[in-house]
Image 1 (cartoon, rainbow, N blue to C red):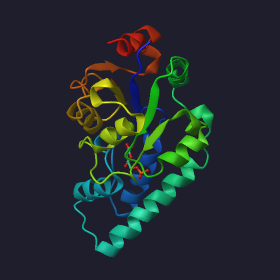
Image 2: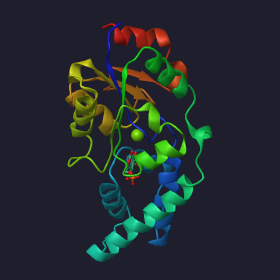
Image 3: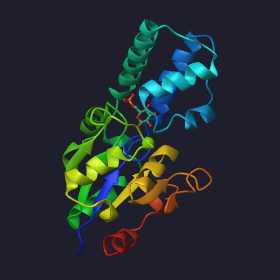
Image 4: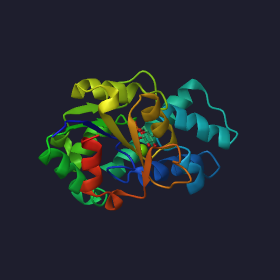
Amino acid sequence: MNKKGFIFDLDGVIVDTAKYHYLAWKALANELGFDITLEQNEQLKGVSRVRSLEIILGWGNTTLSQEQFTTYMAEKNDKYLSHIAQMDAGEILPDVPKILNYLQETQQGIALGSASKNARKILQKVGLFEVFHGIVDGNDVSKAKPDPEVFLIAAQQLNKVPTDCIVFEDSVAGVTAANTAGMISIGIGFKETLGHADYVFNDFTEIQTSFINELINR
Ligand code: BG6
Ligand code: MG
C-alpha cells in the first residue's frame, strides 16, 4: 500500500475550539465597548492571534497603543486557556478518531499544521498528542496561512513531497495555503465558504475509509 502524508488543521477540524476563541474575543470586544457576531467570527478562523486582534479593532473602529495591544493579546489568551483547561477527549469532533485510526492502521504519515500557539497543549488535553508523527504550529512558522509554510514544514517532517500530502482544513486561508503548497485540499465545512478546496465535507462523519483509500492509492 502507498504511504501518503495526511496533515490536519486543529481548530475546527479535530476539535471545536472556534467557540472558545469566539467567547474570548467577544469578551474582549465587549470590554472595549462593542460586540462581534458569529458571522464575523468566521473571518477569524485560521487567522493568527495578532492578526485577529487587528481585524477586531478595525471592526470596532478602535486603536490601541502597542502596550495595550500586548496586554489585550495576553488577556485574550488567558481567557481562551481557561476554556481549554476544561477540555478532554469528549471534545474531539465526531469520527475524527475513526479516520485517525484508519490512517494509523494503514501506516500513513500523520501531521498537524495549525496556526495556534496552543496546539500542543490541546492535543495533550484530548489525548491525541502521540498520534502525530509531526507537529507544526504557530510557534514554528514565520508566515501565517494563507502562506503554505506551515504545511510545507509538516510535509518535510513526514518526509513526503507536497504532491503526496493531503490537508484537512476548515478555514478559507488554510485551504488556500494547502492549494498553494501543491497538496490535495479537503475542506471541512460549507461548500459556499470552501469552494476552492479539492473536496468539501460537512464533517468527518461524511468521510468514508473507501475515500481515504482512493487518496492513498492515487
Ligand atoms: C487558529 C484559529 O487555528 O489559530 C484562530 O482558527 C486562532 O482562531 C489561531 O486565532 C491562533 O491561535 P492561538 O491559540 O495561538 O491564539
Ligand atoms: Mg481551523
